[in-house]
Each structure stands twice: as structure tokens, then as C-alpha cells.
Image (cartoon, rainbow, N blue to C red; front, side):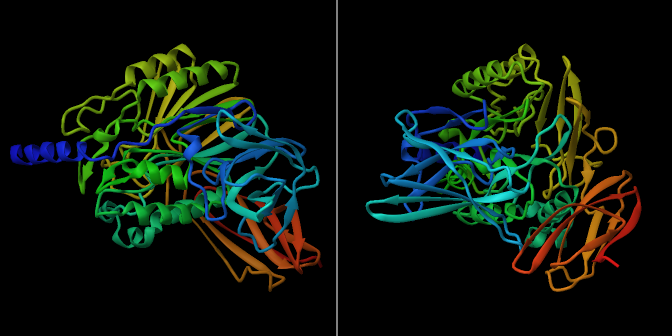
Length: 507
């Protein structure tokens, strides 16, 4: 062991002599979702897509949630000088495809962030859905456009809502084979969580780190981030993400956080859902040299929150002090020191300072992951919630794969557990459609609820245009295009029961 440590120390010194430090530029803060603040490093040097346009906000992993008739501000980085802008929404990966051009109220170049700020309006006639975002620029050099999938959600915001906490997604992680080999191959366990969450249809999902693995073979981030991004597009609800340690290792000259910023966006930021505030923290904020790993051997995989981020968190909490509820989301639970998550026995830097801020600003709940098991601890009137892994190895004998449904009723946290401290276990909720591609006028879906809780399911039927009725469910929305109708249905499924929901022409 001593020789291994000596080798690793030598390797660290060697790495330290290389030019691998994270790029640090001028930092910028700007408003994102109404009074939310976003923090992005080095906005002047953000990567530009092949089209010459980069959508900085909103993103598929940091979307805008806006009501009908509301406005939202896009942040655009481009190499062109725009003469005219185009902003369009299109239904995300949907058989019934709609396109809606948005009126632009204002556009101006921000000399601080080096980005264009575009204020777009959402019309009253638009349906409540999750949309892809297209941004086009007409310039003297021609017309150019780019698309960001699942970046805008149009919905009514109320004091009654739900969201899912998902964590330790671990795309590329082989350790899930300890739990189930078949369900680990092809990332089936992670995909199954998405499949079940889509059925439950929460208002949004938050994912607190370790979306990829980054600790197996050279240059794996190139593959894992791309694959994870593709898998996340299967969500039919808005998703917000913050990073964990596996997302930010530096291996063989690849910095995971550079991939994060390219695929997912800022390392930390905040957003509002109506009067409810969510602060997304990067708890793997180690300096670059301390994020070095060599295959399975990482020097530090515990928590670290630097002073710059702590200062930002305090300012963010000050601005949100009047929120009905304040949430902090991060990978490493600040209640627990992570000294044992370091070969050099480095503790959780910034942990005590964060706990002080949580107490001072009356944060209502803190959501974390990392340890691959469930825990709920209440301290100083703050509920600290740790959620199990979606797809990796398990951290305790009573753990299982799963996700956590959190429900807010009348402005208060009503529930956050399946049973006691536990998350909802995956693979206990299944559903199967007959042919559901718009070709059949009668479609069945069989839902098997093996959970010991009642659920409300959202079902999407695709049928030829016509008049329909539903057995064992209630239609709440319809859309039609190109001869196909999408029928949105709600159905209640009792605990440990099966139910068949059928759509057919009205008799």
C-alpha cells in the first residue's frame, strides 16, 4: 500500500507539472428564470457549435419553465452579428409534431457576460408541453440556426406540485453488475428509472451528480457524456442537474468538468419554480490538481466547496430569503465529513461554512446522493435527504435502486419518502402498450403497480383523428396534427394492483 501511495504521489506531481488546470476567466452572473441567478465560468470562451451559435440558456439540463403568456430570456453566444432573430418551439420527440414561432420582445448584447440576451414571449394559445428550442440568426453572412432539445416547458405553476430527486445515475459504471448484470448492461436500470418517472409525470426532475463514471478506461468521458446526454433526452419532463465527483475527474488529460459544461451547462446555478427556490451546488469544487484520478484510483472523491462558490451561495440565499421554500441540491451531504473519501485524508472543505449558511437562511431541505443508500436527518429545522443510486452498486444492505418523489401541497413539503426514509424502489412499476403509433383507433395500456402506494399515472395515446373515450382514465388534453391525435390521460392505480386503460372511439 505504501508503494502505491508513493507511486500516486509521484504521478500527482507529474500531472501537476502538466498544463491541465481548469480554464478560469471572467465570471458572470445573470438572471435566468425570473429572479433566479445563474453562474457560468468564462462566458466569453464558451464553445460555439458548428452553426456558429451556442444556446447558453435554456438547456435540456437547465430548462426554462414558463407559463402561457409569460416571457423568458435566452442567453446566446454567437460569432455572427445578428440582423434578425428567430425563436421557435417544437414538441420534443413527439409523433404529433407542432412548431410555434415566438414573438421577440427585446434583444441586446450584454458586455459583461459577452452573450446576447433575447426576451421571448410564450403565446396564450400554446399547449402545456415540453418543447425543443430552435434559435436562428439572419446576418450578412447568411442564415444559421441551432436546436436545444427539451429546453422549454410551458405549464401552469401552482403551490401544489411534485418533483423527483434522482442521483448517482452512473452511465458507464460497471459496478451495477453487483446488483444485477442483465439490468446493468445497456444502462437498462437507468433507463428504467426514466421510464417509470415519465409515467408518474412530476413537474420536474433534479439529478444531483454522478451522471457518468469516468473512472474505468482512458478517454471514457468522450463516450459517457455523449451517451448520458442521449439517454436524458428520454425524459418527458424538465430535468435539472448538478455535478458529482465522478463527473469531474481529470484522467489522461481529460477534464470531466469541461465535458460537463459542454453537454450540460454551468457547474452551479439556481432557479425558481414559482415562489420556490432551488440552489444547485457543485460539491466537487476541488482545484484541478486535486481532481486527478488514474483509472480506479482517485486522490479525492469527497466533498469540497470553495470560497468563491460559498460567496455565491450566500448571495443567492440572500436574494431568495422571501421564497416560500428554499432547497439546496448537491452531491455530497454536508452533514457528513468525507475524510475517508480521500487517499490523502482530506476532509470536506467548505462543509461547515455551508451548514452555517443553511441555518442562517432557514433552508428548508437539502437533497444529496453519493453514498448509494437512503437517509433522512432533520437538524435545526432543515430536512437533509439522501437518495439512493439509480443504477450503481449499493452502499448498505437495505439499499436498492430507486428515486425519490417529493410532493409540495399548499406551499409545504407534504412527503418525501416511499416508506420511512426510503426512496421509491425501481422495477416495481411497469406498463405495456399495445400498438401505439397512431395507426389504431383502439389502444390498451396495462399498468402494473407493485408499489405499496397509490399512484396517479399520465398516459399518452396516439390514435387517428376522431372522437374518443377512455375506460379507467380521464382525458385532460388533446393535440392533433397530420391525421394523428395525441390524447393525454390521467389514471389512478391503487397500491399493489393492475389496471388496464383503454381508449376507443365514442360509441
